[in-house]
Image 1 (cartoon, one colour):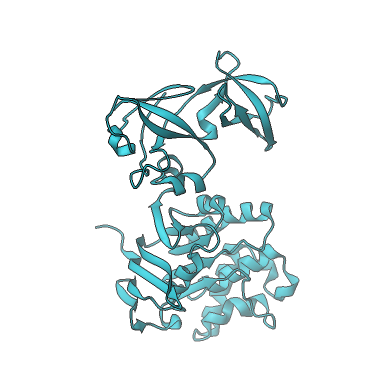
Image 2: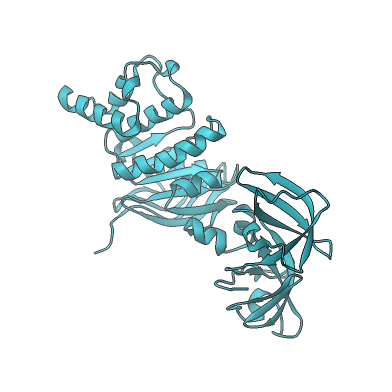
Length: 372
């Protein structure tokens, strides 16, 4: 028997003043899974989260928690009856209460001994045992985030919602806490939905990620598939880095770009916007930085036009003979100067191809499992 579904959205639409903000969103989240709504500012992420929490109505569709409809047009179960925990951007800790009393806040109906035990259990889980008698203003940003998480988890909610929980933290702390947050959520058995604009947070925390754009889920998938098998151009551009190069579709198994021929399971040319396969049909191939390998022995040369030092690696921007540019991630001990020419070769495990822009509705097509 499969895992039970905790959260389900069925064709949800939300609007403000008649303006659609979220359109036709559907997904499911199994018990114990961590889902993420990822997208740029203004795409509808927080509106969708507030709809799940019960703070905003839905204009169409349904939201279900544990199989029970909690939102539909004309009906909205109150947030406090949904068994939902929330962690807000600003943590929303009560400033006049100690950390201990903040965490205990949702446990007021429990006997004192049981609530004390639950507070101690959560303090140990999130790592704030030494801060329980402090007040929020005495805590660092990371400690405040942990305290807010402990408070949200205390009543054992069916679903935990996190709205940009790291937005007030510096980059180093965000990276560390995002990994710790996943461990904490998994250790607690929580089912959670995270909203963020930061793909690194999404990748570090979530099991499943939905890329939201213009109020619509463009792709609901694993981080691996979003990066290597994007469903459309927006996902390809938004997730990771890369550049598009023009390509010629040679046959259903091969496509040719400036750097050579890529072999793989290429669909019929009409599926990337061409008319007749093998007759000069065109496409555009997305090359990721990890597709371009630095190789001193290669006869294929490219000129370094920009470099970004990243510690263990350098991200090079390289100019090809045509003047088009590609990106390459290279171990940082290969430190080349601007203007220097270096040898490169391709190592493409997943060919990502779309019809050239302007070819109409069929320009969203991923070509999986191709190898150089």
